Length: 288
Image (cartoon, rainbow, N blue to C red; front, side):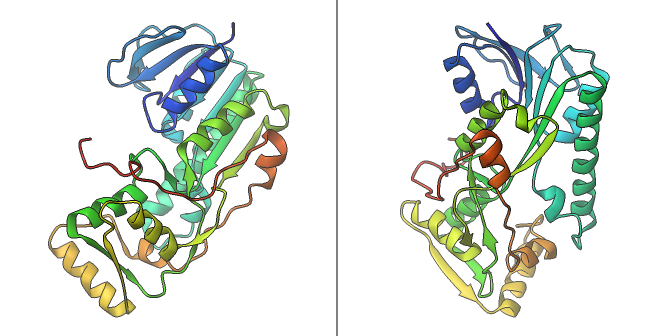
């Protein structure tokens, strides 16, 4: 029986990944900050990259669904024997590299360093590493993008966008990401490579938001306004303490096409993401 060690196992990608591994009869060590109940073939370890008790000495595969830079440093410092490593990063490595916002540029730099360190460490240990870079994640109500839009819509009964919010997006479902991580475990063509993982459909930003709203009950309203008016509304929101992390760079990206090619992932491990079809229940009320 093969053994897998999964970090971020109770997260939005980790949970469906555990199901895939167990269905394939892997023995799984799953790491979570919160205590969890063991199940047949699944042993939970409590902790994070700063410390976990009970880690195995070796594993056939190690998968990180948590922050790439933190995992990379942990991996480099921990002599756990493992021939196969899969780690999630983000397309922000490219999207935010030239951002006008210093914090976003710093995030892109951390992702680049994290990828470099993962591949370097794996090579030194004769292990095979793969990095997966998702686009906008949705499907579990735990993401920071579409779920945040749903929360704003639920709070105010509406969402306001600038009229030119027509940049292209490729939202990707959490289960498609879990499937990608599972599929590439035995795909030798993916060894030593990084892959963008977009969703299966490309839509305008405005259309993406509209579909989120239509999945809610009752559907909040969508208003499109001139950019100067939108900027004024955003300034008022900031003054009132709302949307403080929604900055000028984020507004500019609404107008930009963020499109990635999935053909390498399709060729190397059969990546086949679904179209963007948000459904009721994907954006639960806070606390649900």
